[in-house]
Length: 214
Image (tube, rainbow, N blue to C red; front, top):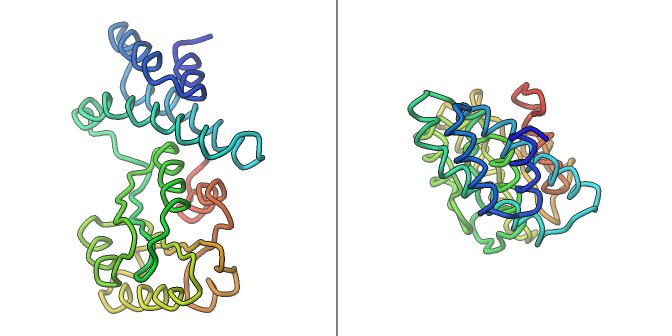
């Protein structure tokens, strides 16, 4: 196995310590941070994401793998910044105002980060203005909203309207998800896409931004 395959394997296992040792070894040997990110950490999370999509692993395994990936990413971030390596895209996300549920949203964020995207997670019960301000300030490519309550879904429409009012809607893709959300509702409020589950959100974002899966 190459050093990249070994790192990917340790991420799948959720062994942050082993992945970290391999990263240090690879850096000492002159490997670039960018390649270690995409061919090592991201590749490992891509495999976990695919298994999750196929019900071959479950939320606890995803969380452990994401922790290993994030620890590795923390080590590489200064090197990536110094090398001017840009993320694949910036995603502002949160649970819509009135909704305190965030487990699904958190998993989507982890998987998207594992796929190489920069995640700006606003948390739960996020106001319309906070979504709009964050999208504008961070020059987001995507705004992702989740809702678990039918009573809060209407606020998603307000975010779309808010992005339009701020003049940035043409530059930002809007995706939505959550138990009561449907493709028809996404179309009704003018969103660009709907993901039925966390793993599908990666394919959706890749497609909307014209990115080839890594």
